[in-house]
Length: 106
Image 1 (cartoon, rainbow, N blue to C red):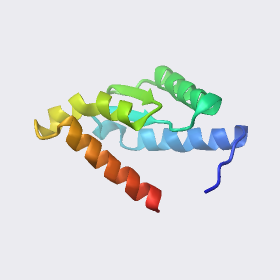
Image 2 (cartoon, rainbow, N blue to C red):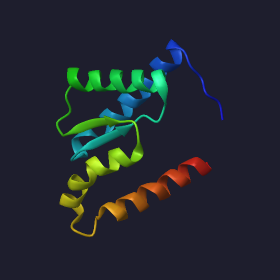
Image 3 (tube, rainbow, N blue to C red):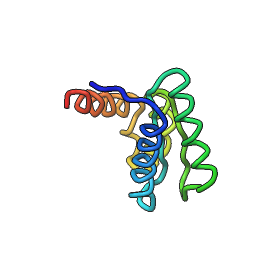
Image 4 (tube, helix red, strand yellow):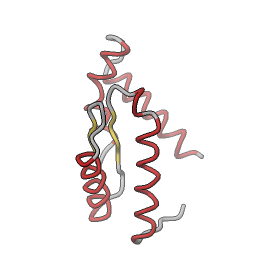
């Protein structure tokens, strides 16, 4: 696994994240973005993304997180509203954990 850093890499990541966020914006009820980077780099990415969301507000609730668990917890009421009572926090955690494991295995 390669970890790149520097302004050019940061700009590329933010460009990709912005594209992903805007792509299905009209179809979303809520959106949680998780930046897993730690320390100053993670704080910078979360701050910049939060600032972008303030400058160009989405038509739905959005929030940036540093952990997957916090993002899932914040999204839970929105998911439950769409999917019903069976979308429990435990079911959401299990589903997201499965997706994360699948992604890491690639």
